[in-house]
Length: 228
Image (cartoon, rainbow, N blue to C red; front, side):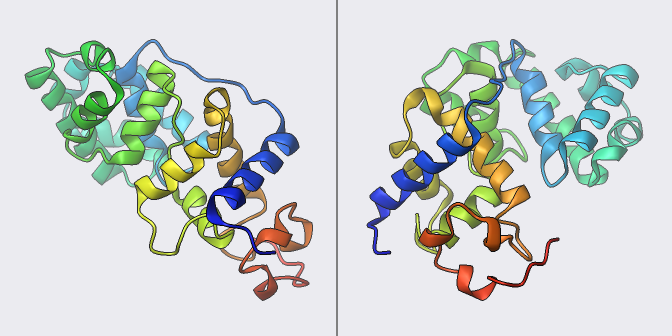
C-alpha cells in the first residue's frame, strides 16, 4: 500500500486510537516526582519502576534536597529494583544538586515557562534528554506532546511513518501532526503498549497485527507464530 508519510501516520494513529480506546490520563502536581519517575522508568518495566520509586520515597524521600544530600550508596540500594542503579543513582543525585543550585530547589517555575523554554531547561540538567524532558512535561503540565521511546521509534520506522534515519524530533513532530491535541497522551501510551504486546523488537507478532498491511517489514516475520 503506497501512503505518503503524513497520511500513513494519520492512518496508524486512527487505527490505534480506535483499537485501544481511551486510556487513564496521568497528571502530577509534583514535577520533580515526575522527573524522578521518568528517570527510573528508562529501560525497565512499570512494576520495577514503581517498586524502586516507592523504596526511594520510603528510604530517602523524593525531593531535590533529600536526594542531593543522601549518600550515593543509599540511593543505589533504594532504586536497585529498577536496574542500572549505579548510573541512575548518579543522575538522580546530580540532577537534584543542579535543581537546588539553579532553580532554588523546585521545578515549579520551570513548568510555568513556555514549552520550548521549559524543555530546554530540563534538558540542561545532567542526564536528561529529550524523551525524559518531554515525558516530565506531559505528566506535570499536561503538555500536548508525543514523547518518543524506543518502542515508538521502532514502530514508526517499521510502518514507514518516518525514514530510518529520522531524528527524535522528526518522529515526535510527525506523530503530533497526525494526532488531535487531546489524544496525544493517549497515542503515546498506545504506541508503547502496541510495541510491548505486538510490534516487539524480536519476534514481532505480525500475524495478529492490525497494522500489518501498512508495514514495511512484516513479510520478514509473518507465519512464524513466535513470541518473545
